[in-house]
Length: 178
Length: 132
Ligand SMILES: [Fe+2]
Ligand SMILES: [Fe+2]
Image (cartoon, rainbow over the protein chains, first blue to last red):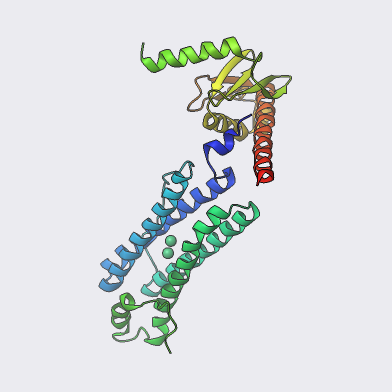
């Protein structure tokens, strides 16, 4: 008797489902960054607006990378619905706090997926995930550094303006520079 | 008639004529049976006196939507509309209108069949592994 399940796709139902959930999470992250960009724009934080717009584009790329993988493996990639995205934020600082929290949630989510892959012995997907796990180091680093600017520079006087200007300049270095 | 309709009618007739006799049944219960046709990569569901030909995808969709039915709510609701459940899925031309007991029977039949499909998958994996 033929193995119809395996002929259809090499992804198990569970793995297909959690990858689709991650596709949705990336789409929501993209929408959230776009909302942050809009908030910064209308509150005079021009540079941060550009930074969040770029983050939003990156999250969409992440979504498409996952989407392509599910499709390539014969799975059913689901174009996600994204609803009820926040519009208003309490303050300039709180935008960055939420951005960091979002990145932490994404990292945790990828960790759980990797864990699931190991349990199911799906090393193909596990290997595919490595790119994302590595990417999250950078994503969290940048979000954390941005938030730290609020401590380092301070919001008083022209502080917020200085912070805004510095945000897009944050770069993650892969190499350790002595 | 459209070519595809003709061909699907044709394959239906083919299945009707060949069912049960030659095809391996993967799971049987009192309520019906599920067969697998390796020649066409299709599953056949025999339930309540009718035969339905399904691609694996449609079979999995059907199972998911049957699993989603809240049997407790169906049983406890005095509402007449919950005496029956209507099940339609994409890729399955049969519309199931079933009372509680039959929903239960179909659910059991589908999960039994799914279990055997998974078992078969594992067997294939073990066989492949032993060849290396
Ligand atoms: Fe991402
Ligand atoms: Fe990110």
